[in-house]
Length: 166
Image (cartoon, rainbow, N blue to C red):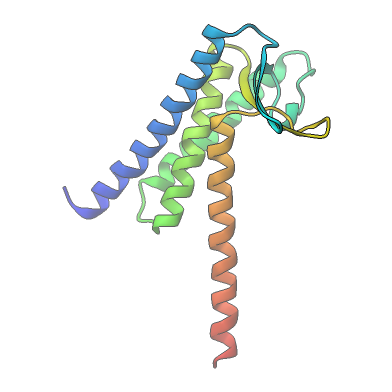
């Protein structure tokens, strides 16, 4: 297998691992705990079992049901675009970012398609203030976005440094 094909396989494999890990964790929470369950792990962190019919931070959670199909369509469109991007030659940071985002998008899309909502189970809190609950798919999406932003900022900085040295 040539280098570009091997790299594509690695990126698609990472997306599948993220999807599988996300679904395994959600299935475990769903099968072993009741809805509304909460277990304190640390003074700032709980494992919980909550449902999110909306998007990030429960955006449009109470919209009446149409949002399920809307977010599912967006997830599939973005996933198709990311899969296409991963088929092209990429820098490692781009491949990593797109793979993480793809795996996370597919993880949450699977929930919406099969369950009708997303299962969230990670709850961070401080002094009574709770960050909205989230899951491994969300962590992967945010991780991918952070890598993309960091790479973009480094590129801007490198271009500025190159202009200054002229």
